Image 1 (cartoon, rainbow, N blue to C red):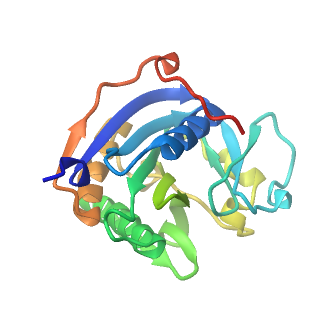
Image 2 (image 1 turned 90 degrees about the vertical axis):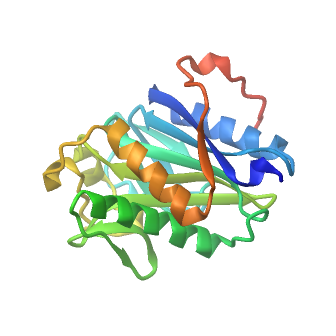
Length: 229
């Protein structure tokens, strides 16, 4: 049995991780992986950054700020990442698992909804607007890219963060869309606790047999980026 098809490796990069560095590393991993490469999920908290999807309209950034703006090759429009927000990057061989992008999106959303349910929160989908919502406010965003049958980028879930930077954009391209977070919904859980539960939900939703915790990466220099844009 090829265990790489059933084991999901998880790497925790910690906080204060620059977006551009992480995006380059994802591209590098995806470009260099082969049929026996393991599927991985990377846990990250980014330094403050607005990210624009590959075909995003920059006009969705409504006003200039001191926050970095980064071009991304994921799908979708504009979103914000910052401390207190859980970001999970899903580097998965979806072709190996017989999944298409719609099935992957559905599985990710289902995992988030299930994790929220564990905390007593009802999360829902919205037709034509990927992500998860609570009382019409967005709590989790999705943005993915598939190359060589493999996905990268992933999801962000608002846990306990400063939400004010969202007021300077049309989140995910929707004017007037409000956002929320676990803290404002009365959930006093740290990011590590939230991540642990969500990983289990993703394991079940996407059909992996086991999660293997890889060594934490405390120094971003430990992993070298060879991708050149």
